[in-house]
Length: 143
Image 1 (cartoon, rainbow, N blue to C red):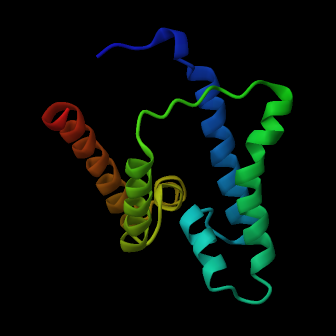
Image 2 (tube, helix red, strand yellow):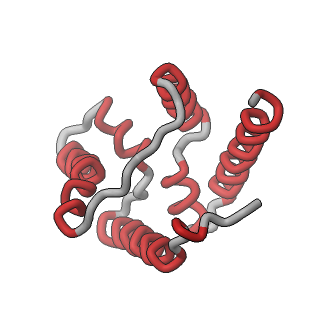
Image 3 (cartoon, helix red, strand yellow):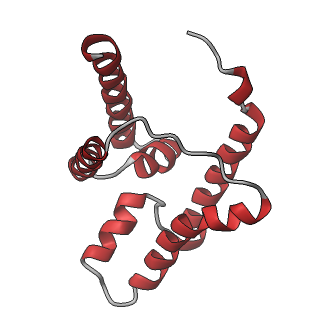
C-alpha cells in the first residue's frame, strides 16, 4: 500500500470531520433530531405537516453547498471510474441497505456512534465489513 502524498490532506480532512461533528451535535442539541440523511430524505416521501420545511432546507444545503464553496475555491475534479449502469445499481443497493439497516452512514456512523448506540455500532461495523468485502472482491477476485 502506498500513500498518494500529493493528495494527502490530513489537516483539511480533520477540519472537515470537526465541522461535521459540530454540525451534527448542534442539530441534535438545537432540534432534537438525528442528522441521518436517509431519514431526513425518507421523511419527505411521507410528509407530515410542519415537518417538511427543515427537511427541504437540509437537503437543499447538501445540494447547494458545493456551489457556495466554489465561490471561495475551485471545486476538485471528480473522476468516476464506473459506467452509468454500475452507478445506478450501486445507488439502488445503498438505498436498499439503508432501509434494511434503519439508517445510513451519517445516521449510524456519525450520530449513532457518538451516542454510543449499540445498534449503530453493529450497523457501522457491518457497513465497513461490506465495504472491505466489496473492495476485495472487485479488486482481487474479479478485476
